[in-house]
Picture 1: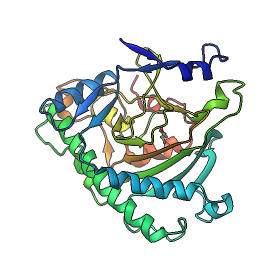
Picture 2: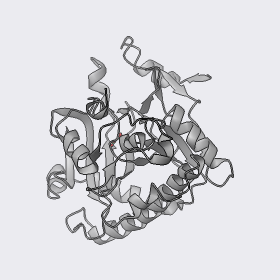
Picture 3: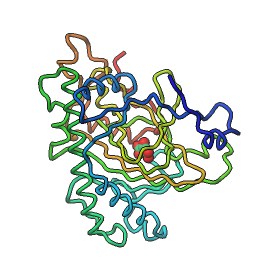
Length: 325
Ligand code: AKG
């Protein structure tokens, strides 16, 4: 594999031995959604990495940048004005604390419902504008997510093209939208923990679509355990396979472990759409994938899995609990 060393990154972390990867990878698969080979490349990327970058995605740049600039405005407000929104249980503003089990990161964030009814009247100085931009963004993203999921089904030669996408299109789909802001972190790192923006984890849902500004920080863990840095690209989207998709493909697709490190000079803003199924949906391998093989997982519903993850730390191997021995 070809690895490009970034001098700035190498210098920034040079005092931390063995903890931090200093490589920016050019091995990350790139899928051009406008090309006929997209479905084949997507399947290959999901098997090998559980991660890929998407270009020619069809989401207009202004839909992205207008929401990004509103989000930056929100995060630049004084803390007490941001806290008016309320804690992220389940939706609201969070600062440093991630989840309920002691995970901490150098990050502040908004957790938002993807359904239109969600009350955004408390968000920032111009909530109406925020709501409108958010709705535009969300419908473009859901459309792209469904397109990608349909290409996956086709690539896997599953007859029912909407076998995954119908779960996101369902009115009861339990999808979430998250905006993360990582302020520049100029503290001298004393250990690897002090650089952590968002600790290592896999996403529990089906699929995640991530877009960030031009600040790097995202890293993915390869199957051999090596961490590589994902070069930023503000015009593209990055796609993660989630735990639920790993189960539905009986382990053929790989739910990718990832994390975010903060940057010494620049703040990072990322927006992530987590596509999830309805709460009562059974998450189980598709018969057409199994071809007579045994399921690697015990049966569970999305609600059972989601509730289980609430009781765990980010880095825990949550799916391990549902594996058959
Ligand atoms: C998450 O919010 O689950 C993430 O992995 C964060 C990724 C990012 O902020 O770039």
